[in-house]
Image (tube, rainbow, N blue to C red; front, top):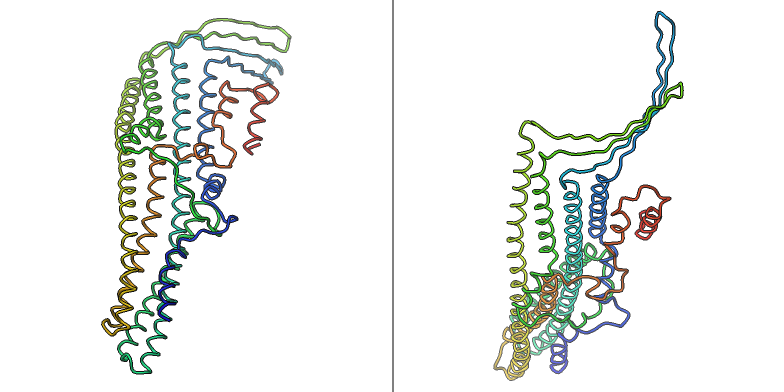
Length: 453
């Protein structure tokens, strides 16, 4: 019996961390599933398409505007009834507005770039949540395995203690201690099973389906060897930083446009009217318009644009600090996890040897049942700490990738169709007017490709 207890205790950690069949779901599978199923990613793709359309709307300010108008009037007078009708076409085009329309187009383009960066940021978050959920399920599964093994071990030990009590080698107190420790182990097992259920629910939220059999995580991706190197990359590649930079550019363009709000606008006009006598009237001309007094709204609009520019400039500084903090936190977590793994390995080895020695001394009468139970609990705690530290190290590596902005489907080489944020933009940037045009047909193809037709 003593030899069996030793073997069971020594294999507890190996059982908890053992690999699973090749057919099991891998971490890459989970991330790919999260990428395909994410409503948040789909939502922000729609936001990006709306921003693309803002460019098309801004472009139309430089296009001609053609309207038609028709009228038919019947009048009953003292002289008799009279009917008249007319139809006409009017056209106008912006000739010059001191660059305000072009500034509006440029600002809309910067907003598109900012929205693309926001979409990448969302993708990073979605994939990190999938990684976190995957590894937390693995952690909880390992905890349950450890607790189940502990319950089996304590059940066998209780039986052995009861046998020894019956022959008078131990007291009733020893039996009660073994019973109490087994009850505590069963309570701990129930708690870990509840934790596993919670982790599986979180997995479903992050990935889109409950976990099946999960494979052991692959080797973690490479990250910079130093925190300073990671911070440098994050400052240039983190999508949150890129988003704010483009927002700053858009705000500065809006300020420039607001400064020109009091400048006049020159438009070319043309028209033709046909009445019921088939007489035609044609016209062509230029119009010049501009504000004289609008109650201070132009000055207010400028001040508002300047305030919004100052806001995003300050936000750029804040986001930069936040990114630095994210990188620092990730490397701090990584350092703690690596140190904990080393310490926990030492603790597991020492606790295993100590447990073997305590059991031998117990057989010789130099140790009590409580000593054995306490040492078994210490070994369980050490094994639990090792499992947790191993998972924490894996999570910390992906935290670094997330902070740098490199936790994307393309960067990780996931087996998913990569979304092209420029496809829809290229189809609408010139504001195609009808589906019969080449641009309109291309837009139809893009819409069908993304499932929106």
